[in-house]
Length: 314
Image 1: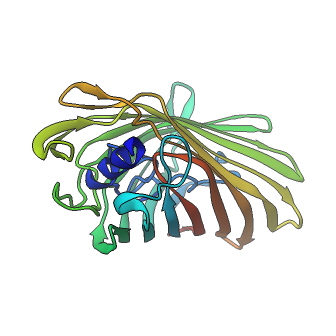
Image 2: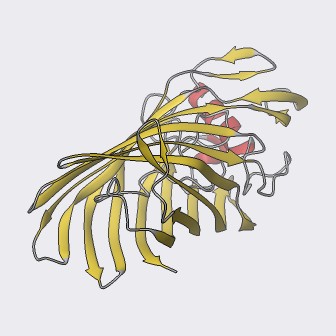
């Protein structure tokens, strides 16, 4: 029953959308941030593109038919016994690689920003809750690209701003109502016939000052704990234009959440996902199609996500 209560707190405090990194059962996401989805990036993501402005388009659909407790088992009592999530979205991200080779700390500088359009449906207690609209804004004013032979790397910090719609009384929300700061390191080892990519992140969250504690019904302040997460990918070059491989993500909270400064036990989430993927280069257009199945979830939904990612110059 304790797991059920904590999971319900997680839902009532927002559970913003994927677009797919968040934090905990009482907190707002558990790996489902509205504009920075887990598993979004994949094959050869560390390779710097030629100078220009690029549009990265991430279309996804996430579906889950169960909510897991802290022991990893499906919750089968209370309002979450028939839990369902159906989240469809499109993340628009714009990236600029300047013609001029601007160096900071030895890395080539480039900025980017993005936002998400979301259609989110959650079933809790036999009722469906729906919210549609624009999610939180995400931007990285500094991306630093490096290359050492076959090794490509990017160091950057993503900022997620609380611009998406949020209502403390709603089950489904589009925004987090707090800032998230995400320092990250991305590495790609690219050989003539194969490549391996890993993206490693630590999330730091500010406080949501407009929060209702479902345990008491009182207005309070909520802060999600720090979290580690990574995307990974490995592929084989079947033809000069086609890569075939596997990819996925891992999420693990490092801390429990806090309400009014007090730690709430057993609010850490965890999940692992893996699935097939293909990348095809069609002229200047790069197309990635992939699927990811979640396993080992704790204090969050467990489901599957399907992606179509495009990258092309404007």
